[in-house]
Length: 374
Image 1 (tube, rainbow, N blue to C red):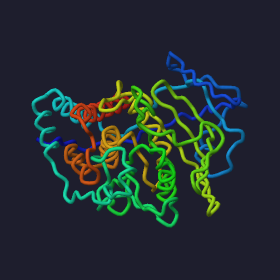
Image 2 (cartoon, rainbow, N blue to C red):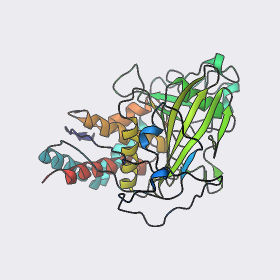
Image 3 (cartoon, rainbow, N blue to C red):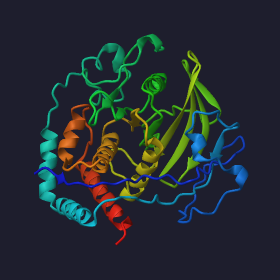
Image 4 (cartoon, helix red, strand yellow):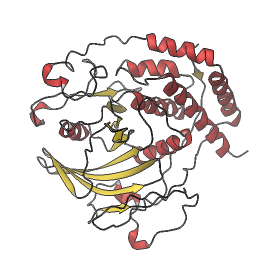
């Protein structure tokens, strides 16, 4: 049985008022506070504060780069105009679905049997493109792939292993689901970010897990790096908590001399084929992303290692919650996942990841209910 949700109108995802980016020396101290503070009201010294509005503006960047080496994390507030009775009905239905393991198992089996049509991947498997793929299974479909401008490419190729993900508007992708860059595809990645107007990057994997490279370090630790015609300058790095941090980059196209600010949200503790230890932490991460992104019309670039398991799970959660926030009367989560798999293979790779997506949606509804006046 497909999972149906009814109407929920919500508006959440607020960032803290201060970005708390601190001026550092040549070395970045990466010490993480063991205890998460629940009080965000204690201000840093005035000269060490950068307003988040300056990080997301198109104005000149501060110099030198600003970095924060301490955590100033607190959970984001939730705001919603949702009716209490509607919220309780949704929550009860979600919890019943999650408790019925047999139902969940059958739904997952049906999802595993689902075959996207069309599903040709001949371009990804061309000899000149094979080496650009982390996996030869998780690659962009021929009919649904990000095409680079070959004339601006360092190797005159239009291929990158990345897929546009549409939500309600077939003309404008809401996301770009991509693999983590390889050393040989870093330039392609920044070209993709530039050409698609991305201002937010969501990185969902540690760079290395158990000695295996999950994603190449595609940004400078300090100062700037040049990737073909794209200069990337690290403006700030701020550790929100032990689970995630935020980096701000100043991206310049040396060919056109145009510039843009790009913000990367990096979730540090979600491991391959697994689920986050805390839905609450991932939901707070999402709220911060959506506050930064709100009002933008460009796609959010989302990637993990292969751009399918963790990437698909995050996009599924975000898409479902966004549909509810926009007033959708009914939402079928299994059908939403099939819609994602029509656009990129392997989105949400395990039953545990699918169950986590359901759990996260239920937890966000619960958080909205708790925030409502009783």
